[in-house]
Amino acid sequence: MGSFIEGENEAVPEGDTVWRACRRLNDVLAGRVLTRSEFRVPSLATTDLTGVAVRQVTSRGKHQLFRFGNYFTLHTHFKMDGAWKIYSPGRRWGGGPAFQIRVVLATGDHDVVGYRLPIVELLPTADEATVVGHLGPDLLGPDWDLDEAVRRINAQPDRTIGEALLDQRNLAGIGTFYRAELLFLQGVHPRTPVENLTNLRRIVERGRQLLVANRMRAEQSTTGDLRRDRRAYVFERPGQPCRRCGTPIRTEEFGPPGQERRSYWCPRCQPGS
Ligand SMILES: [Zn+2]
Image 1: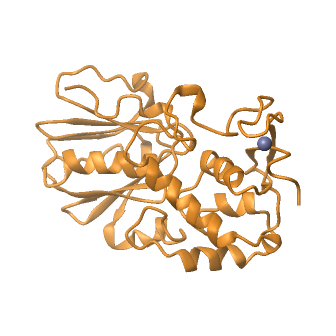
Image 2: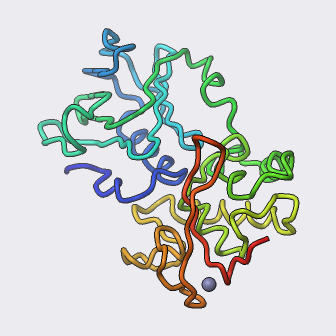
């Protein structure tokens, strides 16, 4: 028994990837007492959770929340390439060079190792809203609320749908992969202003369907094909022919200053607004 999350790094860390990682972490940690903890970040260098029980590991959008028996919560986030890996004791850790390790949590049965986590903080569980309270409805959460997500997106009608879908305050869980694929499937150009859309509700619903369909598997696919170079219609396919019409896929970066993200679209299937 090696890593449970073998190959996880292939998937873009979006809502479904985080949901699945937290589910596996919860399977091995919930109800267990930590036999060792290590935080390799300056602010938590002296923190020791040895002897503390893990109550639950859960996701909120792309955030990870580890709730402990001492009523503290460990909050982490993958951003671009973070990962949690699970190993049997004595197995070699393979998630990256040792200097990229940020957190180690061990029970007698598993070593759980967090690599390249740009956010690692411990806070009272009662204060979780200070780190995830700003998030819109979670596409994979038990409290998913389609009407509220649509309402939040519509609150900024002149914004592009491409930016609105990535803003986790509107709805939590969509990153650049699902944004690109979703807008292709709906025939919408990424720069279309929200106020010009006639099918916003359908776009959001379709987004949730894509995450739900992918949350149980390591390979993210929107085409239904799991082969490595067939999983996406437009994402990371610039210059390649559209799978529907053969037109070369286009790409550009756009977004608020400092938060520009790359988009992909077919100029024929997704005409400009
Ligand atoms: Zn096309």
